[in-house]
Image 1 (cartoon, helix red, strand yellow):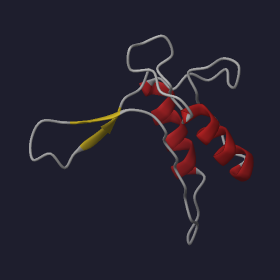
Image 2 (tube, one colour):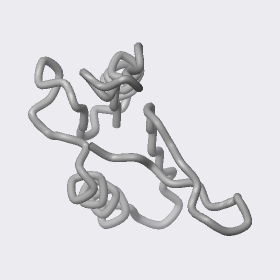
Image 3 (cartoon, helix red, strand yellow):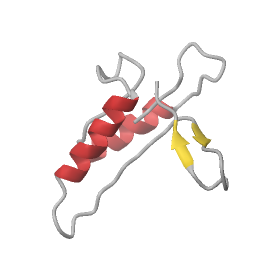
Length: 87
């Protein structure tokens, strides 16, 4: 997943390239917020769907890899609960 938050004051550089390099190596679904690279937006629904796809396709002794490049946040509480910020 690569989110650069295009057109916002929090726009990032390099996140989509990071995700593309990982995808090329792993040949798995790619979610980005840039239509030049992907038609699949990293919405909450699509991120959860991709995670479910990864889990459903897993077998015993598989190594699963999830790569996220974008902003993150924290939920209220003890400060340990990090969250992914979708589009």
